[in-house]
Length: 141
Image 1 (cartoon, rainbow, N blue to C red):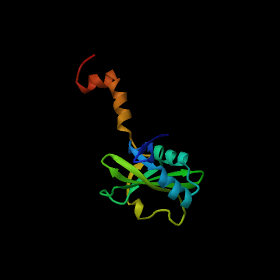
Image 2: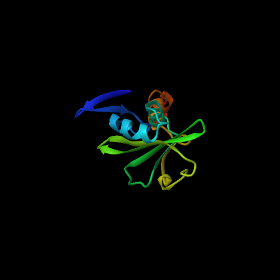
Image 3: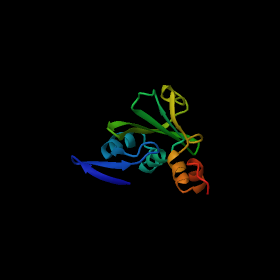
Image 4: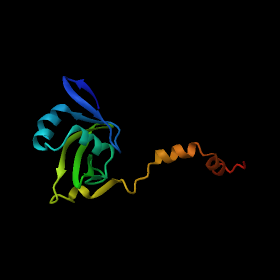
């Protein structure tokens, strides 16, 4: 995991399934996440962001995203919000208790690993598919 310093603050650079630029302030991790949610490790946060089961928002206009993943029959959540244009920041990360299950946070699902189609992968497949090229442009081989 890469990091850098800005204004004497250590900042980790992360990447999520839907967001390529996510930062986590070390101070936030050390003083909030590790203190209030000791079960959360940097490795676990990175895993949840990279391979979530679901990503939710409260509404289409919300700038807060809830990445969720089931690990060993437990659900974990990483909350990120807009920091700057095209950059998100980790707010918190925690183990979801069963009573918290589905809440207002689950109104708008923006990613489901079982139904998500990665159009970039499809695009790469088609770029090298000559049959698709011939069909697309109505050209006989």
